[in-house]
Amino acid sequence: MNSNVPALENMPWTRVQRILARDPRLLLAVGALEQAGPHLPLGTNFHIAQAVVDEVAGSSGILRAPGFCYGVRMKGSRGFAGTAGLSRKSLHRTVNELLAAWEDHGVQEFILVTGHRSEAHLEALLMALTSEAQTTVFDLSAIEVGDLLEGEPGLEHGGERETSLVLHLMPETVSTPDLVDVEPTDAVRARYRRGHPPTPPPGTRGVYGYPSRASAEKGRRLFHRYVTALESLLSGALGPEDPA
Image: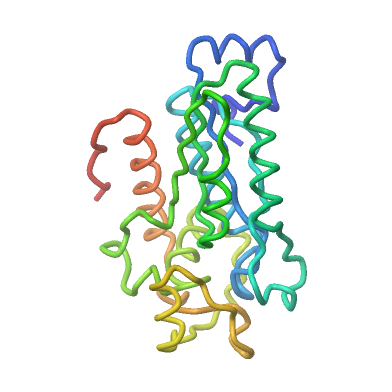
């Protein structure tokens, strides 16, 4: 981790108190521990959200909490070893209790950053409210990135978008020999468009889309888009153009 990132878990409470007195905001990455195909790590969703949070915390000086790498469990995940998640109620209750504790210490605004494409997951975070502090849920998957990719990012899982990001952020974790393309069916397209990621059918090994189209350069541009969008939210201003 970048030593410039103001990470709550690496500081004594006195320094945390001083930072919050200067800027009473707190960033928290909330990911998921779920399969993303045979070529990507189980923590793909979490690692992407955490990298965005670390980058923005490092550049802005806003305090960031340790990330929470468990999201609402997805249907059909039982067949993928290592996947684990919570019910919507459990995630909501857990995050709510964490926010309440930090609010007692002076946090006035929480920014929850996630990219887990689950309606139940987002609902759990959106319902996490404290008595006075403001809570904003920043959904990375809602950021428009179609112009940076060949395919449709909203219809993929473990495809071009996620694989590109991991190639940029953690290339050593990508198992390229296991990379395989799977054409999304009409049924998959319909469910994704309704906001309900479908259960991976047998034989796909958890992939929808075209990870073969991924590249580290695409991942760099995607990551910049995400970081710029979050910085814009925090500053209330339009961000700079994507890098050439």
